[in-house]
Amino acid sequence: MHVFVTGASGWIGSATVNELLAAGHHVIAIARSDASAAALANKGVHVVRGDLDDLGSILAGAEAADAVIHLANKHDFSNPAVSNAAERGAVQTIGEALAGTNRPFLLASGVAALAQGRPGTENDPSPFHGPESPRGGSENLALEFVGQGVHSVSVRFAPTVHGTGDHGFIARLVAIACEKGISGYPGDGTNRWAAVHRSDAARLVRLGLEQAPAGARLHAVAEEGIPTRDIAAAIGRAFNLPVASIAPEDVPGHFGWIGSFLSMDLAATSTATQALLSWTPVGPTLIEDLAAGAYSVTATPA
Ligand SMILES: NC(=O)c1ccc[n+]([C@@H]2O[C@H](COP(=O)([O-])OP(=O)(O)OC[C@H]3O[C@@H](n4cnc5c(N)ncnc54)[C@H](OP(=O)(O)O)[C@@H]3O)[C@@H](O)[C@H]2O)c1
Image (cartoon, rainbow, N blue to C red; front, side, top):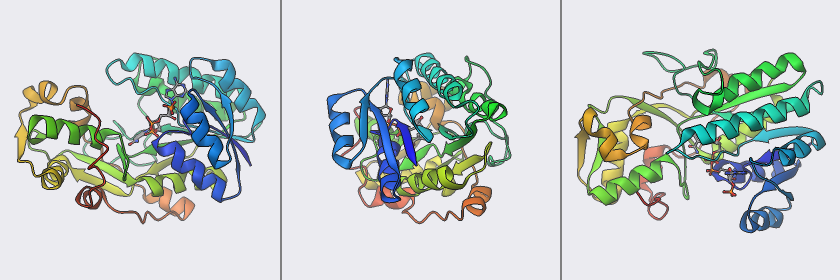
């Protein structure tokens, strides 16, 4: 297939591109910088310059391809309305471009707020509807396009897609721990985060592209839920830092914007996804990655 990928230069996107190329697909990607364009071109990707703020570039890419994988995100966590608006605009544009074609459209999503008191499952619909909601309600928007002849598939990534070189949430927690001299967890630290290794996540995206039915919600989840106190303990061991509870009222001040994510219970299963796609996660666990030094050089400044 000729697959149009947004976010192809990102953490998940670059691994996904490698998966797609190795499986014989052709990749067309937008890039917004010379560095990203060069890195993608060196892999054999057909690069067009584009940006989430230039919906014409998204439209042209989607119209010309056999399938779309949308992974780009502005990730402006201090001002999520900006990221959410861009996300919704991109999904609306891709959906309209693919309407009536039955072409695959995979988009990134998450596992937040799927269920109360139990891990979220693929059967749990996203509670986020409309432009004001998290991620701009993009998952439901994309899945609504199934009724207009789009083969939409949501890929819900665990809150940590970990591995060597990750600059995401765990890298941020490492940076905060190193800056504060303490590896903290919120409250009693029993709330849990699901996790998946980047290589397993990328393989799932490729399998989802090739095999998932329209309307599917896939869970890129290898570990159902790791208590945040265990994550903090693993960071403490890896960076030789003391580990301590941070009182709920002190979480925003201690952790900044990531405090609200760290306080959520983000547990999820992937039983249905594994059965549907014969996908078995095989990568290292988050704790193994931390112990192996995967975060020693990539922590983003706190
Ligand atoms: N990583 C995780 O643990 C995780 C967990 C849950 C959900 N997700 C979701 O999965 C998707 C991929 O995440 P990721 O970790 O791979 O993100 P990432 O490493 O931050 O990469 C983001 C990608 O989006 C591109 N991008 C950013 N702003 C853009 C803009 N204005 N126009 C065009 N492209 C732009 C970046 O391009 P440049 O190369 O130019 O910067 C990069 O390719 C996102 O939707 C994310 O929210 C990720």
